[in-house]
Every structure is written in structure tokens, then in C-alpha cells.
Length: 195
Image 1 (spheres, rainbow, N blue to C red):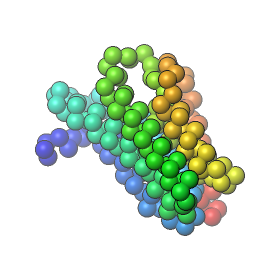
Image 2: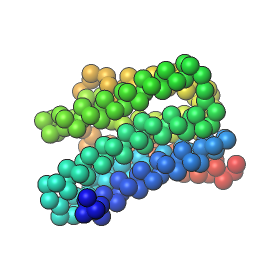
Image 3: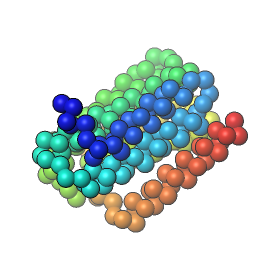
Image 4: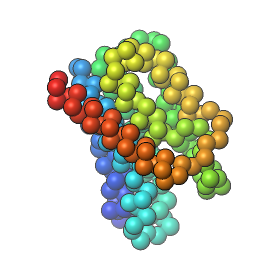
């Protein structure tokens, strides 16, 4: 099993590490730092496939890499936002029920993608979890959005599993997405420094 810890998965491991840091740093009111680390996870997730493709790997190493990526996404984009919100003081039955719906939608979307991604290389069904991760950043940064976390949990849950086909983005959209993500990360870091 140790042989499957491969340098091709380094960026996926980094995404997971940033997600864990988001939860660890979310105690109290460190919303900006939480947003920054979620953004760093998103950035890693956008590039982990490109990084992995640069290495010669056997079929089993590729399969392990794909499973690792999916498990990491379930943790980072499913569990991390919820646990970060709890660490920041979100509680209550409604919040817990919405969190459960959100996490179920996240893992359902990822498992569906694992099964059907080879059949449909042209697009996605529902919004990818990485995009949802990016959408969490303003929720953590803007107090008026943060006050509606249960609403966002349900909206994001629905977006992940909605039966709408979305074309795979082209290069221009991808570059724009990275620029938006970097801008959110810069804002969250400056917001954190100004404390």
C-alpha cells in the first residue's frame, strides 16, 4: 500500500491539508482564514489532475489517484465547510438538518461522477464540488451572507445534484475562474491581516 503514496497525488494531499487547516483555524471568528484555506484547497483541486498527468503511472496508481481525489473532495468540499461553521459557532436543529442534506448531496454527486465520468467527458451533471467550494468563500467573508448559512447549505446541496447538464468549461472560463479564486483568496488574506 505504501507504494501508492505517489508524488502524482501531491497536489491532492495539499488540497486535503488546506481543508484540514480551514477547520483547525475556524475556531472563534477566524472566518477570513477559513475562507483563505478553502480557497487554497479549491486552487489545488483545479490543478491536481494536470499535475498528476505529468507522471508516468500504472492503471492501479491512476485508480488510486482518482479515488483519493474523490475522497479528498468529499472531505474538503463536503465536511470542511460544515465543520468550520460549527467551529465558528453555528448550531441548531435546522443547521444540522441542512448540513446533513448538504453532505449527502456532496457525496452523492462525487460518487455519481466516479461512476459516469468516463461515459460523459463533455460535461457535468450538476455543479462540481470545487465550484461549490469557491462559492463558500464569500459566505465566510461577508457577514450578511454568513447569517443565512442554512439557506446556503440547501442551495449548494441542490446545485450539486440538480439534473442539469453543464458543459465542461473551456480554457477562457478556467482562467477566469482561477483569477476570481485568487482575488477571493487575496481579499480573505487581507481581511485576516486587518483582523
